[in-house]
Image (cartoon, rainbow, N blue to C red; front, side, top):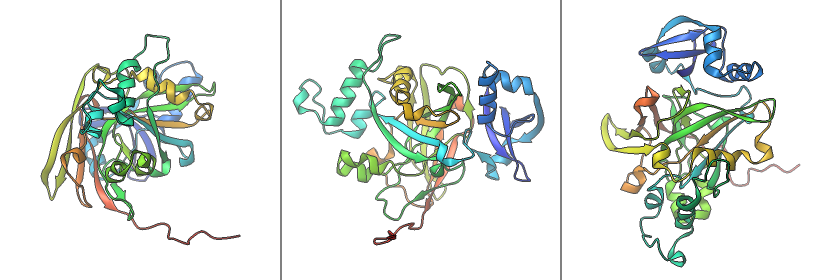
Length: 330
């Protein structure tokens, strides 16, 4: 089952089930978060909650997308209670993308810190069931205020040195009243980062991640195939500027999903009931590695057949929100 959140022509929020080129409205559902919390309270699952409520009106999916009425597939009414985070160096090949210059995998002293973390993941990122594996690289992106809906522009801040795509999967979670994280499913994601800034020094990774992002348009329920292969594409003036396949799924990762989730949710501050978490699982495919520099007006497309419609966003230009000397003194 694949779910979307959308707005009616009158601007009201609804949840829908994707059925081919149509969306069937879930009766009485205004948000996926509310559906999930009701399922937790009743001891069921999200798909069962949808079935229990039943389906109603039929809408044209393409029209909803074209009119930018598709919302991110999971959000929170208070953006401060949606936390966007991610993990890097999680996919086989991701270290080579980040650090092509370092190929010596035998001599630990010759490795960069990035290559060391990747090597640790290869050796200990998929522990036996019930055991804790090595922790991954982790980063914070922002709260719900940075999330851009499918089809909308990803803002490029005036101080940014780059605004590059990162095609990957995101896990979508709600924290239950029992302080336990519940994974609702997965969505396509574009984790959109500043790779020029990150390349200057890996200690700038934290700065480079404080950017907008997008995920969706669909929330895919249930288990994932072991091997997933999608396509990441950039269009400029209607023509394909760059295109490359990207791999995901457990077979293409050096960390298990369970291990990545454990090392995020082991922190008590991430287990506040009612909160929403969107966690990006990483990628090994970047146009930046091929010398591409996206610019305002370019269009990103991230597609994967198992997730339905592609995630499409353009690059926009943001205005400055703060100036030197702008801090007020009380």
